Length: 406
Image 1 (tube, rainbow, N blue to C red):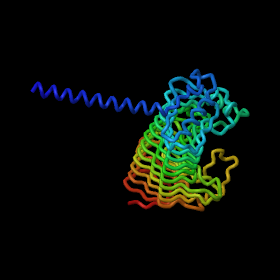
Image 2: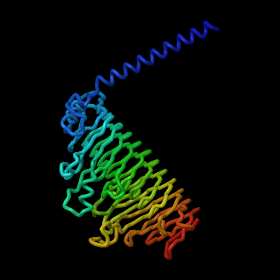
Image 3: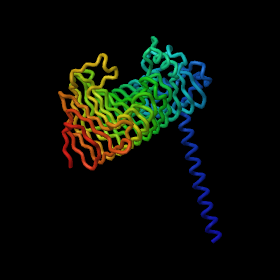
Image 4: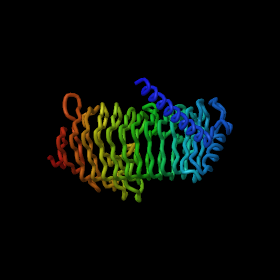
């Protein structure tokens, strides 16, 4: 018996040593194609502009024919506006960020540049970990004071790219949008945390436009505008396990600003939770001619706590209302909208609003197991030009709603 135990221990020790050797070799291999931004002159003091160093590390990694890692060690790195251009020789470049990237404290330095950290025409790029800080507070104060201010920049954007991963990133206090995915295919955003005050203007959490096959998963977003917004020309989106608040909810739109505009289709939002938000699930379109559309949209398994507009379709969207609104009737066609298993409370009596266009009424709306409360009763449902079906749901409909009950 003792001999058997001794043999087992020897075998276990051999296996353990073998695993350690393999792991060590893997680390060596990774390090051999790793590009530390310090090597290229980055200074982790939060004061020295490290933009050129980051671009230098990118040029080296992008030029590699093998998988490459750009390593950002602990520390605070000041960056001006930077653009990481493709196409790379490597089809797998990872930014491993263990530090903090900060924008200049003077909003005028990058406030007119459009994007602070920009990836253009890249493929196979991953951003893992780290914090980016847009230092937007002074710009928001300028805007709140109605002074002459720059528009502000998006913190992080991918344009015309593919096979993108953003994992474990924290984005805080962006001047405007935090993350934008535009004109891209096959993107995954997971386990991100986005934060800005509830009164910070135009600080959308994640904006997707003209993109397909995008997944946004397991993330916490609190900001001053939409937690997630989906713009024209987007399809095949899967959004799951999102916590939103403060913010303006998860929105399809705004759509219909252009006469010729791509539609939005095949979007599923599942397992979202909203806390004290302006909206929960929203579709918004401008009241003007357009060939745009929104179809095959599913909002499911949602929990809503004290939202002002838990469920809203607004085809008269105009944030500057009543000044300068087009009021021409939206041409955006909305159809195939499924709302199911949505529960919670509304901060207002009208908890479900289906305000559709007189030119293109909403068709194929289904409410299944939708139960929202206001004070001690069910919410009111307000509707215009909307055809919908409901089952296992409780609400008080306004007169004139075109309802089919099952």
